[in-house]
Length: 231
Length: 53
Image 1 (cartoon, rainbow over the protein chains, first blue to last red):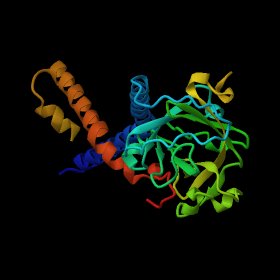
Image 2: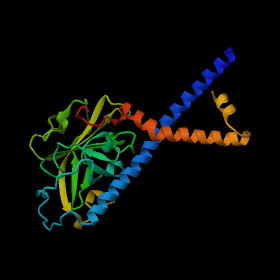
Image 3: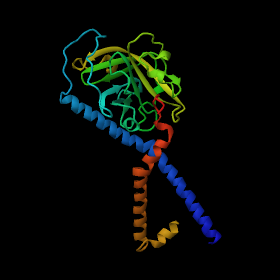
Image 4: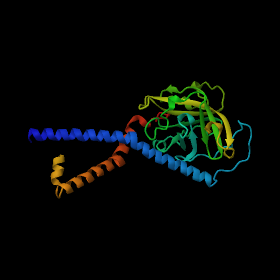
């Protein structure tokens, strides 16, 4: 084989590898987002169909703010059961919350840690989401500030949680952050808490960012959107 | 490598160009549909939970 052929083949290989890398970056940055947006929309549609069919029991109680909502049925793994709204992430930001934190589940929405409390119940309702890729749901996570609302609905009730601390940075093995009363959160008594987790740094996996909130108010969906979601 | 493919495609230059374009599209499709979804979890962007998965 002549030197010319060797050099030519080598340059062709380099160009091929370069193209592959560019394509992969396009896939990770752009295409996963397209796929995730589609998947999340279909999850929310599924939920709204389900709610419209009235598979959730209608309720009439309009107790005080902290009255315990009825215990929801157990969530089915990998299925959506709520929609989350975080006004801080944008007025139109809303994502489905699915049961479980498997890799495949987190591609379709936010994932509820299966062993933590259910939405609005006593204990810690913990949810994980992607910081980057797959629609970047928690891209603006560090922007969360005390007092910010995290609103969820399960089709019958609006739950308004309020963030209590600036996002807390910890190590991936620190599972204590999703305990019923997380030690680092500053909470001392059992209550109705919410924990959000995502990765940190933005494109890395060496740490996790955690945000804690407490249940501030609930209201039945018949009363319309909670104040935090009104413009 | 690319020269070899070009020489082995049938037809005149136009047919060859069209076939090459098709080949490129097939390769991109296979990459996006099968290869990248397999490779992507090997990167750290999926680690967003604290249960040490």
